[in-house]
Image (cartoon, rainbow, N blue to C red; front, side, top):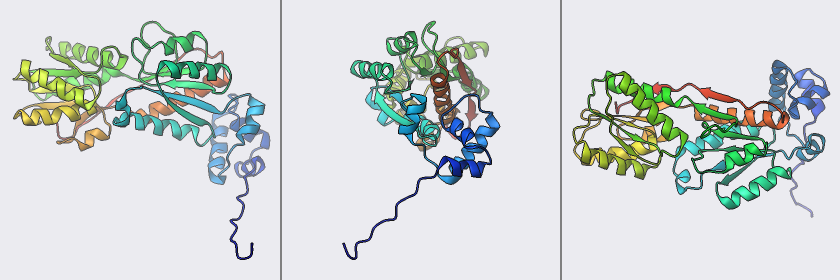
Length: 340
């Protein structure tokens, strides 16, 4: 119609243009876009920089005809409502998106549950999904062994329970707990307790075992424990139990920042100053650590880097179905703020 403004069409960037910017052949760019594993790593990086510079976006429909891949992966999060209030899961999604978005792979986020599992297995077997990343499974969760036994592409966040052979990415949980123990003992605290994570999950078990072992090595063989579930509310309940049973505690290792966020107000209401009366150390170095009052001394796990590594490991399994199971374990670091 006269006077109507029509937005100009956005021209798609071609493989040839990316090749020209990268100084390589069109075939090389195609191999990088289609994740062919034999491409030299430096050459792959050069092409990726050219892709970023030109704004190239793969044609997923065309690529799927060549690779017979769906171009989609699933991220399975716990079904508990706490995922919407726990910054850990946002950091996971951010790390995953940082890898899949530039290469045009779609991310399907879903919550764990029996009906979800049926659809997930069907989508994987029928090629509608290329693979799955599982976050925070627990002892009774059937999905890791189900997917591993069916030899479907899967990567687990954290070590698997038992002897299950499945690729996974983790932080050295015991080493992180040891950093907390050494710091609290180094401050001269003598009556140190801990709020553990759930003891049907590897992270909860490993942080508690690592802390107890480190404390024993440092001469503290009796460490009071109250179990939480990584939520703020469970941290509040756990510290109430600890104060009732051990009113003289002067040091506290909390196995997640979110639980520490719930515990600190309870300590304050009980008349216990932090860190003067009770030194508190958390685990994660999430955004919760910064909104705590006082700000939280904590063990940092590089969640975004770990999530990105999970995607890279999964895509390698997709590209090389017969690759061996492997694990990647990141080192924790210690961040000192005002709570200890």
